Image (tube, rainbow, N blue to C red):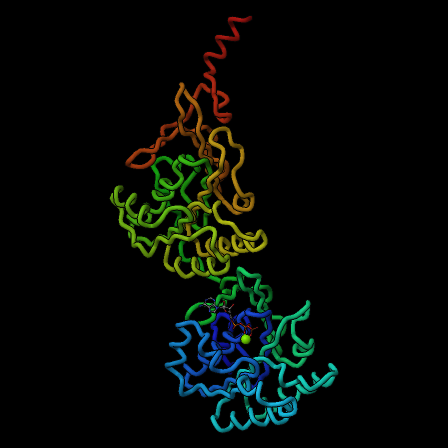
Length: 470
Ligand SMILES: Nc1ncnc2c1ncn2[C@@H]1O[C@H](COP(=O)(O)OP(=O)(O)OP(=O)(O)O)[C@@H](O)[C@H]1O
Ligand SMILES: [Mg+2]
């Protein structure tokens, strides 16, 4: 039986959790969250009824406890009886270098483990234990000795070290002794956790999301679990005439992208797409990067459609962690047949993580058979040839481009099907109208040329002009 790290998703990353009777390193820069990680490990195991032991070697126990986020402090209050501690942190200024003998300290830890029958142990900050040694070889054998002694009494230990100057640990030897090595990176905005070593099993590599919340630590793996196809039948888009334009109904797993400048009705179309499933009693997840749920609910209400407020989520595009977002969609889309991403262009994040997230998330939704719709706002009002993010167009099965065109001295709305899964879509230029009731597809713009440029001419007039000059 593995021992839980205190974070179920991290247990999955590690192939089940820590090995029993193992010595495991959590390393990271200052303030990365190492202490909170160790406390989270202890609290979780204490909540399972185990006795746990915290050995503070640098920070005093009082300081650790008083710096806990609210929710973690509450968790601690619940299991206080199970949480034991050895506070060398507060003794440190009082005792000399001599007293920090590795044997004495180790024996104190071992007897505390025995007294409390606590085999879940955290050693926060290993420096004082090895401070007396100058040579790397001696530091390594000291850490090795501690690990062996702790294992021999059955303890599963987490110990911390600092990442410094390109080294993943303070002394550069901790990772050799440890059975599992995980590093927390913090760039001042977001935290990432990466497993570098796990004895005895495979692990999921790469940087995963690491988030400190009030209640404890969350890890958001960079991959999503495999999934069965749950939606199996083709469905209508939800706007009269759209299926004919696309060359057939939507196929399960289809990603449809709507691109176009502001005001062309992307959100209205997205709401109608959502409404189609809602009126059939199916669940929809609507993620809005622009408008607040209240606004969307009232637009739908005017169309006579009800949606559960919990199925609309507003995500601040400036403030999103790709992995946290991916897992939120994963959880919230449970049971949904349609998912809408409205205004995805506003999302700003690091390129590598963004493309990875898009790829992982849409692959997941495609496999599940969910019908997804992405709206993407382009900036040019007239004559824009850009469709938006090439990565999104790449994963989209259907692409609908919305535009303005000046027809008969009026600015009209037109749409083009750029791509469809069927490949048999309508290739004409289609005029449509957005009204209070929704979208009306009016039909082909005929006898015109140059519509795409935004300033079309009647073919009939052109012919007459040409004839005149001949
Ligand atoms: N509720 C919270 N939400 C988000 N971040 C929090 C919360 N509470 C604390 N933090 C952050 O956690 C960090 C402190 O975590 P912790 O003490 O575990 O770090 P550490 O790696 O042990 O640091 P040190 O190297 O100083 O020992 C701080 O950066 C703090 O801003
Ligand atoms: Mg700390």
